[in-house]
Amino acid sequence: MCISCRQRFPRYTLMRLQLETQLVVKYIGVGRSFYLCKICATNQKKQTGLAKRFKVNEANLTELLKEILNNG
Ligand SMILES: [Zn+2]
Image 1 (cartoon, protein in one colour):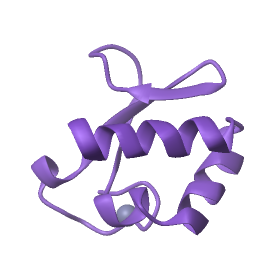
Image 2 (cartoon, protein in one colour; image 1 turned 90 degrees about the horizontal axis):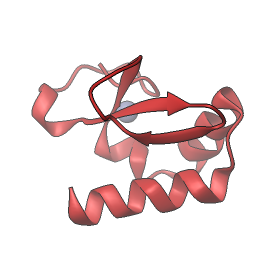
Image 3 (cartoon, protein in one colour; image 1 turned 90 degrees about the vertical axis):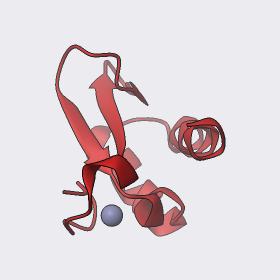
Image 4 (spheres, helix red, strand yellow; image 1 turned 30 degrees about the vertical axis):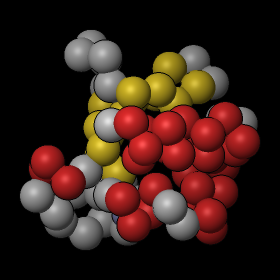
């Protein structure tokens, strides 16, 4: 389930991320993770919401999501 829009998608279509201290990163196998769908990952308003929710830098989050979308 996508953490942002709460819709269910096949897991392989979602990107798995985790929250580090003040930073969202690609899931590295340990810690608490969450899923984000590609629709939300490319939606600026959703990104703003997520950045606020996690108290992380929005520009960094946008950059990370873009990179994951491009490179997997
Ligand atoms: Zn979503």
